[in-house]
Image 1 (cartoon, rainbow, N blue to C red):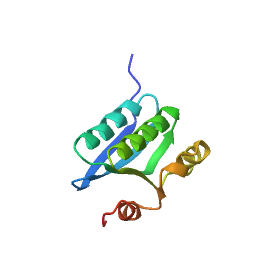
Image 2: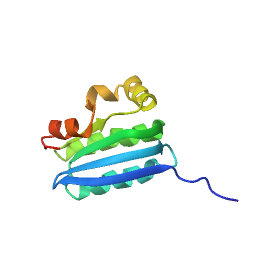
Image 3: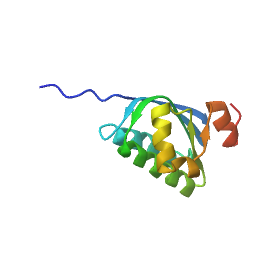
Image 4: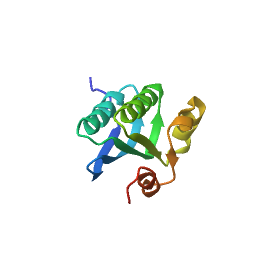
Amino acid sequence: MTEREVNLDVDVEIRAADTAVVSLGGELDIETATQLHHHLASQLLQGRRHLVLDLSSLDFMDSSGLNILIRAARDAREAGGDLHLVAPTPAVRRILEITGLTMTTPLHADVAEALAAAGHAA
């Protein structure tokens, strides 16, 4: 019996001592949410309180993934930073809008715009 392959790609790029760009690809669901949580928590523990999440390659997100984004936004704010979401695919954007996350967490067209909003040049 083979296990279902975990389909979440996470790429972390450090842009400044306090800023990380985290690019996601694949599916953010109950099987992959913990993986993303560990990546984001690690960045916050290392002092990167400004998190930019590039969602342009994220094909699917369920409520487990949404909960991780909500937690990351809260944790970043508690650390004196913020969470910025970049270019969600239409399916992911719909979930973000329906749940109201876009009212409290900024959405940006691209990484350069998000970095500028976070106070950093691209």
